[in-house]
Amino acid sequence: MNAVLNRDHAARFLEDLREPGAPYFSPSAFSDTHHISTQRLAELAKVHRTTTTRSPDAEKLQDHLRGAASVLAIAVELTGGDRQRAVFWFRNVPLMELDGRAAEQLVADGSADGLRDYLINLSAGATG
Image 1 (spheres, rainbow, N blue to C red):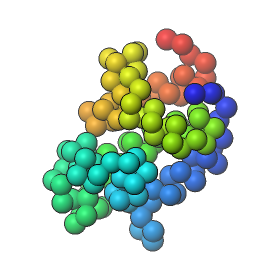
Image 2: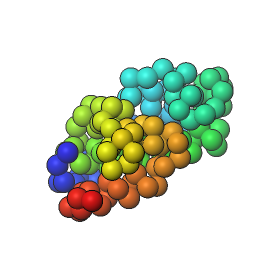
Image 3: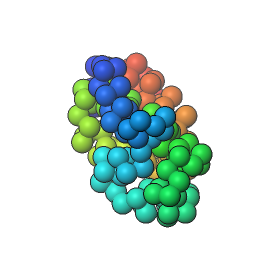
Image 4: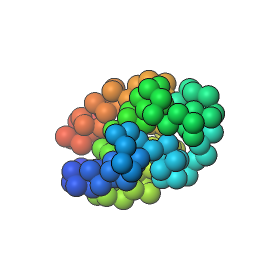
């Protein structure tokens, strides 16, 4: 990832994850963007599998989506707007400085805040 930040990329990315006409993130848009099933999203968010469709505004689900979306927005910025690359990184790249887990698992485990801090430091040139 390069360190050239463009907040417009992140803003567009976040807007595309929102439920049209609603003040929350869309589980289906998130699932589509990440190429995962809504059932897998429910597992990551630690909610019942029907929550993504029956209660898309559920607090626990939205907390997970907010954390993931905020990390991904930074990743989109760091990749110069390359959403596919950001999503691939989020789901697959082990972060050795953070126990070798991928960002997706760190967010699922409730570490979105620490991951955001790590990415912000990384973008500023911190190397560890």
